[in-house]
Length: 390
Image (cartoon, rainbow, N blue to C red):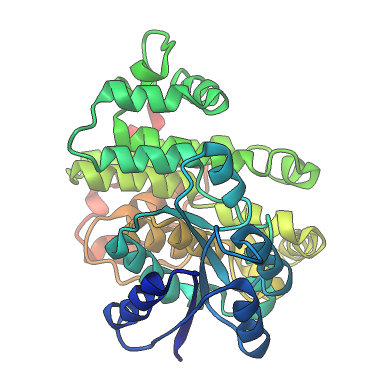
């Protein structure tokens, strides 16, 4: 089935570039480009689109007005904002209506990679009811501007730790939360860390980036009473799994990049629970009731009510955010290892082990997989490592 993409921009040259982008996306991608929001809404009324990419500064109906209408009437579409605005308040406003923000001049290679990823993972939310629910206006959290700026800086060959520290310090709320996390028992640091710059030096850039993304994702739902009551310990659990996953990856001598991906996968493996519960409270209460009465694991009860699991929803969110495929795969399959065809120790296996080898937890290890990979003898050492504070 073709994936349909709609580009909205009043500049003819950009529309031509967008249409040519379809060739780079490859077979199975149908690309349309129109000059304004009115034309786009007319197309949307005739047929649905998987992804909409819209400029902000357009005559007549501007991009914010257009995307607000899209979010209201066609919420099943992923929304990407493109703009030449450099104002931080304007960017923040964009991220309330779109799932991603791109600055002009565009990096078409980065944009194409994101579009292919979103289309590739759209099967995770193929049910239209669920897709409309999780992609609706303000239903799906967006990566914070600080995270996006940090990512851009890390990709620059001219960046340094001091510059990264300054970026973090500009977000007072995230800085406070970050320092609280860094000084918690999870990281076992012997002295008090008092500045974001110190946190950057001790944790490393990728762990810092992952923590910032996790903090924003979880805090997005902090004010929801149902979430606070139902998932009051989810952040602590997720942080513990993140630290444990990274520790196991280090023990197995994975690359530094792979170790940080294990951390991010552990931190966000259950984010789909919050998305489902926050946007469909009554239905999620049915999930909880079904799980309890039928003695079903929560993810199986979710399938009974929603037709999908929190793992699939979380994976789709991270596809929108552009995180590495290994992290998306780990989150998608952390309750379904049998479908993942794991060839070696990776982020998915790290999350699986970190969850099942926590002290006091009932084990549900995939022993057949561990034997196939020749790793079953590692269990006592892993278990011991996870039982010891950092």
